[in-house]
Structures are given as C-alpha cells and as structure tokens.
Amino acid sequence: MERTFIAIKPDAVQRGLVGQIISRFEAKGFTLVGLKMMMVSRELAEKHYDVHKERPFFNGLVDFIISSPIVAMVWEGEGVVASARKIIGATNPLTSEPGTIRGDYGISIGRNLIHGSDAIETAQREISLWFKEEELAIWEPGLTKWIVE
Ligand code: DAT
Ligand code: MG
Image (cartoon, rainbow, N blue to C red; front, side, top):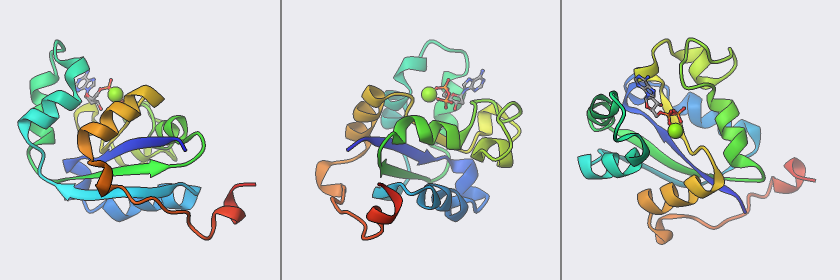
C-alpha cells in the first residue's frame, strides 16, 4: 500500500494547528500508520532537505526546522502521495488555493506549516530516514470498506 511522509512544521505546532491538520487527512480517508512529536537534530534536517543544500534558503530552512518541535507522520492509502500534496497546497502559501492547508493558514514561504513527500520514491526515502520499521503500525481500520470500494 502506498505511503507518504508528512511533517507538521514548528510554525504549525506553535500555532496550535496539529489537530486541525491531522483531521484533514483523517477526514479524507487516509490511514495514520506512524506518528511522533520530536525535536529534530541538525543532521536529520540536513539529510531530509539534502536536495536543497545548494539553495540560498537552505541554512534558514534547517534552522527553522530544528527551532521547535515538529510532528512526523506516515499516512497510507491509495494515491496518498499526490493527494496529500494537493491537500497541503503549493509551496508558497500566498499562491496556494484556499481549501488547502497552506492556502488556509499561511502567508509566507518560509512558514508554510507542513511538509509532504513529492513522489513515491521520495516518500520511501523519507519514511526510512524518519521512522524505524517497528515504529509503524500495520493495521486496517474497520471503516475501510466504507471508504474504499
Ligand atoms: P515543498 O515543501 O512544497 O515540497 P520545496 O521542496 O521546493 O517545497 O522546498 C522545501 C521547503 O523549503 C519549502 O517548504 C519551504 C522552503 N523554501 C522553498 N523555496 C523557498 C524560497 N524561495 N525561500 C524560502 N524558503 C523556501
Ligand atoms: Mg519538497
């Protein structure tokens, strides 16, 4: 089953948006299989954002991610990688559609509330970077037959 890595960033945790953000993925019908609140080490943040290491915003981004706790999650479901990106919205919250998380709650690209893997291969890399296999729950919600035909 397809899985994606989602992180609620420090700004959203500080603003008390954890519950509302988790609710959106639950309400959509995806399954939560991993969840932990944590302070992120600089090493992990740098590995996670490795593709951006040459970009001018890299150091500020890493400083931001390690500045305060985040909530790391793994969500499961058919098409979850692309669908979660739509639920999250465009990178710059000023251009994200209303109805998306970034479109509803943000105005600044450097405070865009949430991370979601951008492709299936990226999701696999990120899930194994952030979670040990035994931290993930393998379960099928009883509601699945009412959500997936
Ligand atoms: P996304 O998080 O939508 O996948 P990304 O992978 O291009 O976006 O960039 C990772 C994060 O880096 C993004 O969520 C916020 C930050 N970022 C991206 N572009 C930026 C910019 N031009 N200025 C400041 N921060 C930026
Ligand atoms: Mg990205």
